[in-house]
Length: 347
Image (cartoon, rainbow, N blue to C red; front, side):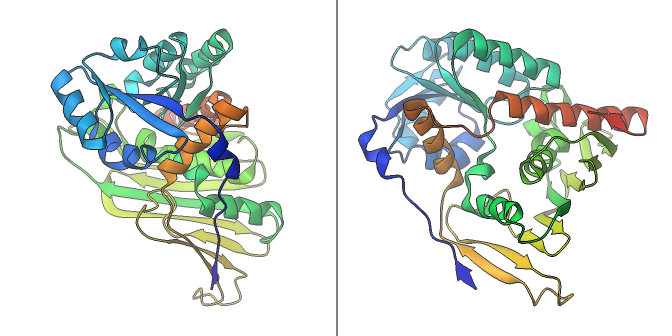
């Protein structure tokens, strides 16, 4: 077993913190993403807005955020805010990302950045018009376990990458939960299948050509509760299954001609425990031949916001820029079309 170290960016101490504002007070933001983001040092969350000012004040107080607004418009009008974090419901992502950028703010928007590629493409024009950075918040690309997997693939440790296999599921039949509301972008593919698409594109380092999918819809909600897909990268494949009504589980395997990489907790990497990935030459079918690499505890949401803040201050590259986000939506569109019409769909 080996332990992977983490590197700190010494330049961070010399940079002025970037002032962030948050749209909405969702449970996800308050409990999952924001606790890591407020740690700084480059990310300084200074304001939060909700359409219910009482809710905004309570949320801001719970996280030590100084200012609370009773409307999204008030937050966007605050000249002190440089960046907007947008974790609003899926159907509001594109609209409020555009409004934030046109208000002079950079934007980190939760996934999916839109409900289709055409909607996402409008944000390319918005970025050109405003000169502001727009990024889709796939926090996993900032986690060292994914960067290690990518480095192993690029260095040939598993030979040629020929397949990525992804499973991601949880059980939720709460009719009041936003993930079970079709009209606002609920369902498995938008919520968690998007990770399979994004990470396979990251590992392969190129865009896929076509896709085919099967979807089982909930008879009450109309959302896709079970989606499986096959995505053709030209001589290499992504195969995945995602579900909002199956046992809680997630795993990624990347298969090469000489070995495989298994990521044990690929997406919901805990902020309170180490993570492990496995490099296996396949000599033992029970997996005992795998070399285990353990990563120190990190918060991937903290790493994501710090990287975005650093990009603003230094001009460094960002992960999941708007062009990358549009590419993800094109694949998701093709998967939905395939499930509706049957057969392969070009991307």
